[in-house]
Amino acid sequence: MSLTIDGITYYTTNEAAHELGVQPNSLRTVVANGTIAVRYMEELGRNLIAADELERYRAERAGQKGWTTRKDPSYQPTNSRAAYFREYRRRRHQEAAEQKQTREQTQTQTHTTTELEEEHR
Picture 1 (cartoon, rainbow, N blue to C red):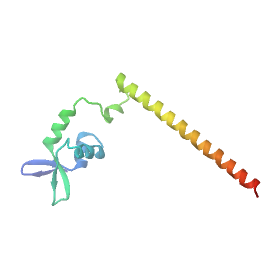
Picture 2: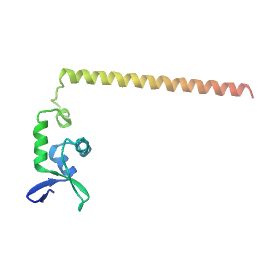
Picture 3: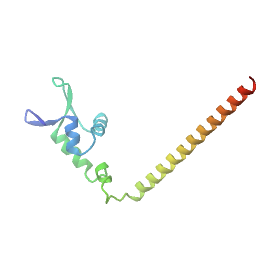
């Protein structure tokens, strides 16, 4: 439900996110970065985003890949994006292996300490 003030249509952050097809938190980040201008309405206690500001942002971002595009079954990433994801998965796999090794070492040390304590009793 948009709000019209002085002939200008405004949207709340949630409404604007819905209009743009992005998550509200993503839009809040864009607002916090200053990429989209907002008008704080003290009476309402919230930020409002003008419709023309949304259109400017939409035109600026036209053609860029976003979540809605990437979740489409026919989406094919560019070579650089595919390489990024391969490296990301490799790094995550390596981190998981290191964490598992650390857990196993900790368990081994705990068992050894417990065995030594039992011998001294």
